[in-house]
Length: 308
Ligand code: SF4
Image (cartoon, rainbow, N blue to C red):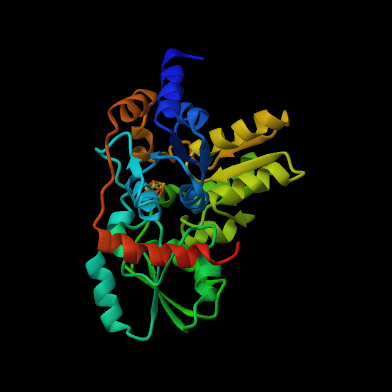
């Protein structure tokens, strides 16, 4: 074990801290984390933990969500600069307020990829793992849904409710890279492989995939499938995550990225050195307005009450 990993483990124990990491984090961060998962799994872990300090290795909205669910705990993020998810910033609270005025009969569902202030205005949050179930659980015919218009498309195919995307063109710049041409190329090169894509991909890419799954869903699918080859249509580090899981079972499977440049830069800002400093200096701490926490928590709890 390297010196830095030893120091991280020691600090974690001394301070009763837990490290949560998203599936898109670098391999070295995934290896030292107490738990690695998708947004929904991390929300559940953040709620369950009895640690005094949560170190969140992810992007801004994820650490905020951990704070909303643990207002009495210290929530830290190892880096504060350039860790914003661009999609989360595409739906400011003001846009939700305006949409609610225009559609007073609609309920509001926002992706967890939103800032706390936006969540505070929603009836429920959702992740890509439960978006259709959250929408279908609501007692209404019309849903304002944002910020990802591609996830809105995915949901609209799985509900009878009217889905109104807010804003009209919300998207993830990483998943936006995947094209129909990419799909045709990998289908030609790997005719026996299954194509798994994320619901943040454009509709035409979703329509050509064998499965449209959250990152957690992709991991479970690969681990439980009898098939041997998979093309992964999401951020490239998910392949690392699946390989780490396969290491535990000793099983060998072939994992091909749909594009090698599908990299989320804000996710890569966190390094081992920054995690060590974060634990030692207890920074950067996430702080949020109490009223925002109270309202946003209701929207998140509503999502968590929907059975998977
Ligand atoms: S992959 Fe896309 S949606 Fe996910 S954190 Fe990065 S920019 Fe945001």
